[in-house]
Image 1: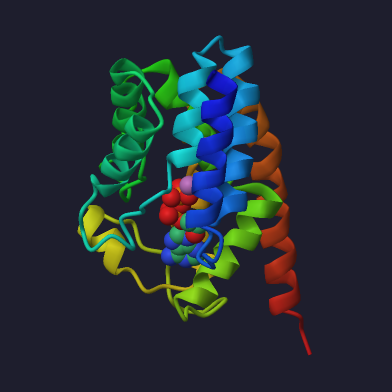
Image 2: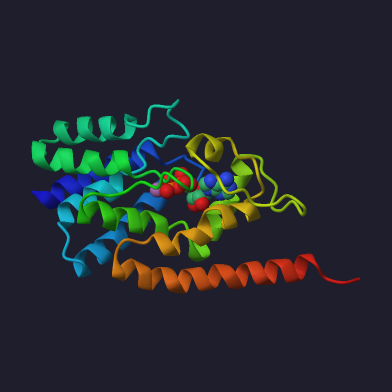
Length: 216
Ligand code: ADP
Ligand code: NI
């Protein structure tokens, strides 16, 4: 029964997000689902809630939903009801989806449940390391951002509105968000994975600046 629900939900998400180029594609959801399951097993979380929340977490992102931050939860809830999932599970999953988006520096989304913490960690892990680097430049291109703009300093965002309006380079995004994620992991298991991915990004940046600043 749970397996059928997971399979149907994967199919639903895959169809809905198949042509996204902004880093919220089906494969992002699939990777988050895989690593959330791995972390959830080690951390003894409820895997059914973890899996459903991971699969559905980007079904409607705030950057694309005209300001309705709760739309993702609504779409997910409607979907889960339509395939006969119980109300308790639906409310746990919707709570996680609504709380998930990272909102700039000061208003970091706090998760109430272990399952929420696991999915949040999994989503953040997919934003760092080699895949995180690839996603950042893909998203930057999608938003017509430069790779790097010497002289334009990274900004510390005071609030969510500033974060949304930011038009900096993708390299700045590393300092504004990606390098902060390691310190925000909720679970021990994710912290360990994040350490390796963080180190990889630091080396990438080191190499990037070395190549950029080559003396003539
Ligand atoms: P998610 O909803 O999956 O947590 P986001 O919506 O914050 O992630 O971003 C999706 C991807 O795009 C992430 O890999 C993120 O690092 C990247 N991204 C978000 N904002 C920017 C930006 N200003 N410049 C470059 N990449 C960005
Ligand atoms: Ni995501």
